[in-house]
Amino acid sequence: MFRQAERGVLPLGELFQGAQTLVELGMQQEAIRLYATWIEHTASPAAYAACFNLAVARGNVGDDAGAARDYLKAIELAPGFVEARLNLGTLYERMNRPDDALAAWQGILADIPDLAAKPALHVQALNNLGRLCEIRKRLPEALDYLTRSLELAPDQPKVITHWVHLRQKLCVWPVYEAFGAVTVEEQRRHTSALAMLGASPDPAEQLAASLNFVERKVHAAPEQLAPPEGYAHRRIRIGYLSSDLCSHAVSILTAELYELHDRARVEVYAFSWSREDNSPLRARVVGAMDHYIRIDSMTDEEAARCIRSHEIDILVDLHGLTLGARADILGWRPAPVQLTWLGFPGPTAVPGIDYVVADDFVLPPALEPHFTERPLRMPHTFQINDRRRAIGPTPTRAANGLPEGAFVFCSFNSNFKVTPEVFDSWMRILTQVPDSVLWMVADSDATRANLVREAEARGVAGSRLLFAGRVAPADYLARFRLADLFLDTNPFNGGTTASDALWAGLPVLTWAGQTFCSRMAGSLLCAVGLPELVTHALEDYEALAIALGNDRPRMDAL
Image (cartoon, rainbow, N blue to C red; front, side, top):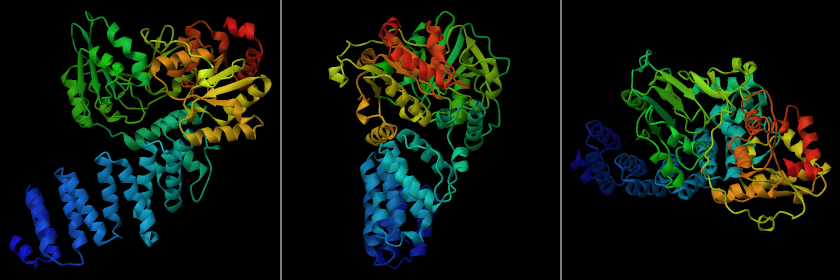
């Protein structure tokens, strides 16, 4: 076969069949040599296909640079070869060359005149672009690509999921809006569990979104690993399961917890697939563990068996249904007692999770039917915090672009938590409190522009919306001291952000609803002795904000 290739007489079909046989025999390098020999000695209009297969073979053995060269050669020989461009972009992304990946996929849209004849490949290119643009925080582009994808192929639940959340992040209202063949009903049905926390005040709808996630994403484990009767360890073995043991809100809250465990009674494990961000916070968290075990290279089953091998008594899931969730690990029941906490402020519906850490306010008895987990109620509040967090020197208002004499309302919650109803209320509050401004964060320039436009549409000058940039953690906390009152969001309250404000001394005004995530700030306010800042209706929330904004002595006392 090699001799035929060297003479340029090996038929293409036999080349493919021979190379595949070599791969199946574990002779990948021989298959690569066969393709390279054939390409070098054979003049064929189908050489682009051999270059493509050679690129795939090189990529499979880790020769990414060689694979890129062969994909480029295939594209040079056949510019309309969409599959080569798709694979090249994927390869560039794996090589941590995201801009090159985007360029490869954008080339498909720009350079292939008959792309309409290849709808499946067209949709794949658009979805790749949308996904990577979202990762790169290029949110308007991501939304545009996914909209175009859904116009071509409306039956894409996963794409609809991302489309909805992108509109939330960009504050494009209404979030749900029918287009093409994509109905509002479909958009609501495929809203992610996390996005639904901010999209619906209905606990039943939030549970339904979680159940939908479990139905689509979670696989039933063929066996339960931990003995139901548990173990008889002298010290209780507690395992924390998370990808957020780094510079992340979960670690910001829990860092001191791991240090405070009584080592005479407890042995502390982490089972982590967290990014290695080299932050001081990550180093502190890892250093506080008795055993820090990375599971990112393990399958879910392997991770579950690893946890079982350490005979963990209590497994604490800090992740829930947030990005990167590995719910299948819990389905194997690697520990006899499993609970969820902090990462996802709603029902997870994940099989194998027995309990959720809560308190009387955040999860009242009336809410229990909408949780698959049983509540473990803490005496004061469900949330922990770190007493060692440094608060930097208080900056000046001028240095942060704030007017010196104005009443500064602040809301540093994520933009996807801002709903049109809450924003309507904020604009009415600004109207009723002279010389007041609203200080926010914006996930993107487009979000900022959308919020300013929405303010002006409600008769409020866009200049009364001010936006804070990103700063170091200690400076971020100090910055809260420049504001007068934190306005919370509903139905998805601030969690870590609300406690950040309180730690820095800024009062928080919240509107508590019927869901766990709409009662988080209320739990915190009750715990710090400010229940008078917890309202239970939009009208009361708005009226109290206006009253406080016009009563400096009362505000100063708070």
